Image 1 (spheres, rainbow, N blue to C red):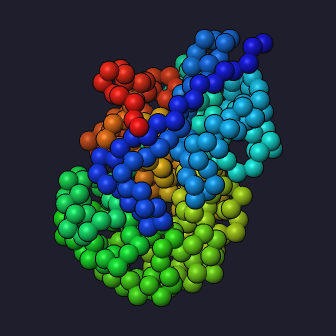
Image 2 (cartoon, one colour):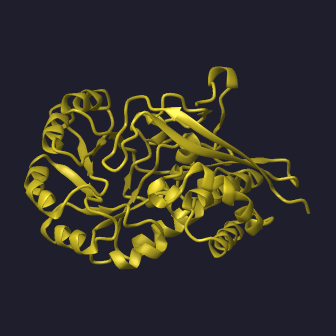
Image 3 (spheres, helix red, strand yellow):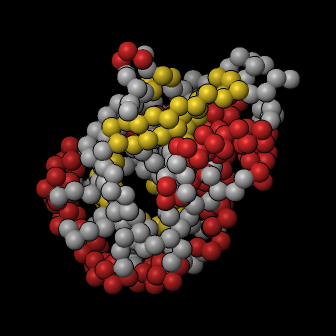
Length: 354
């Protein structure tokens, strides 16, 4: 039988507002990699996306370079949940790391398989469509600027505030003044233990819900020290890239952040979330600054998460895909359409980014 064929697109999209995190100075644009997999047997096309992050050793160029090798490993899979898991295992055996590249192919494979089955991806996986609401993320900026963005996003039940600078406390005070809901804090590896311990009473006073990745990746000693003195859950992100990282975090942190672009896609995220729950972790489902393709794929496994941070497409000025919608409670609607349930907007209404 004829093999799957792939089309790739590297797309750079402006942010709606400047979006900066502690470990990345770029705050103007997001660059993502979109793929289309065509199944010659059915004529169907599966959409996929992987967001390359140089922190994890990936760029658009590395993704495009490894796609042929990974696609050869996939072959023509069995279009079942177990068949796609086997395809993912073959990718892992062929090439280590490269989570975003594997993610793009895995999402496209799940989109294809679910379309062949006539089911949305969450039902294809046997998962519930009842999912938690997403939060909305605010990048680092002057406290007054962050507060204004928080005011505009105050209808979200939770706001995630990026921190990692001298104005952290002032920023959180300003956000709390305009937002009565939950506040989640993400330092993206930028704090020292002394800084975190000094801020901890203030975070508790402000009603912060959780602290995400305060220290450099795999500094288990620092994470354990802070969690031991914190009533707030500490959530590992950069320290929890793939399922193999989970065992080392037992007894270190209360929660882990699973992202499709880190761990390798829909199937890998499902397995990682299930394993995390079995180990006693609270589960956080996060995202990169992806289009609706990546966010829809993530939403398909969101019923396995305690907290959801799936706002990447909302941060973009020009999402090239339509079909994914929030309900009045800020939950992504998982509708009955087969596959991801998203489609490209007309080209004339959405010019290609730089």
